Amino acid sequence: MPRSDEIAQVLSRAAAGERLDRHELRALFDGAPLLDLGWAANRVRLRHADASTATYIIDRNINYTNVCLYRCRFCAFFRGPSAPDAYVLGFDAIAKKVAETIASGGTGILLQGGVHPGLGLDFYEGLLRHLRSTFPGIHLHAFSAPEILYVAKAEKRSVREVLERLIAAGLDSIPGGGAEILEDDTRRRIRSRAKASTAQWLEVHREAHRLGLRTTATMMFGVGEPFDARVEHLLAVRDLQDETGGFTAFIPWTFQDENTDLEGDVIRAGGFDYLRTLAISRLALDNIDHVQGSWVTQGPKLGQVSLFFGADDLGSIMLEENVVAAAGARHRMLQGDMERLIRDAGRTPRQRRTLYDPL
Image (spheres, rainbow, N blue to C red):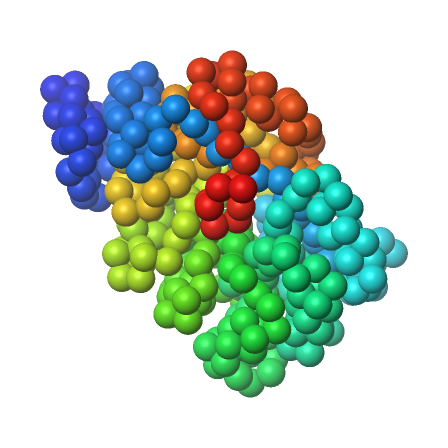
């Protein structure tokens, strides 16, 4: 256990803008008091975002299919191709959801599905073209690294070529899904071995950044991983951001185990662990401007508290979300609720677009 004076020194250095190394980050997980972490993370937040505001977005997470060839132990959403409740949404059904989003003041669409073995590049290009021609002003934030990797493998194309074709069809940015924990021992324990490795996930985002696409980075924690795995994840994201500068935001959230193969096998991360990991993420990622609080998994009140532990954004009001809901997180919020939550925290709410430009 690190000494309290050592922890205080590390926190002071981080708050002053100095970069923390692997050993210092691990020391914070091992022994930093929660409120001291919050103080330091809030100081760092003030250097990256407007101190008086907190942002949010109105968008919709459209899961175009729940069919997935990977049977990850942490996922409650996937279905096999022959399951009675397996589905693939048609383009018109997806367009209807987009129209409803725009009518509700939404500015972006998140498109994610299972890795469906029957969907090729023509499906993804066709969907993007259909939505781009029908809704030219909507931001299409779509297709996580495992989806892109599978298409590249199935089509015998490079990741770069797949991305170039998706961009030409209308892709605007890529979400950080599929990251889970970027440490392969943990990844092998909780997910399909055929799914994207740490190196492959990073390479998809590297190629996207090289092509001018912005992306987000996520971390799902609380699957029984050691603190070292969380540290390795943060360092991997930081190193790629040093190289490319392409990440807009980092979103850490806690694993939800209901209806998953891991249910009962791991101790779920609670609010204390969430706030601690959120704050350490803000301290570690000195080169990413935005860190998002996860009210979807933690509930509105802890989401509000996250604004004092390094978060400057509360994400989406979630007009639709199916993946995390399938695992037991069913929190919902209206725009008025979101703005009230932010005001009650002493901040001014500001609606944003996907790439964090103001509405």
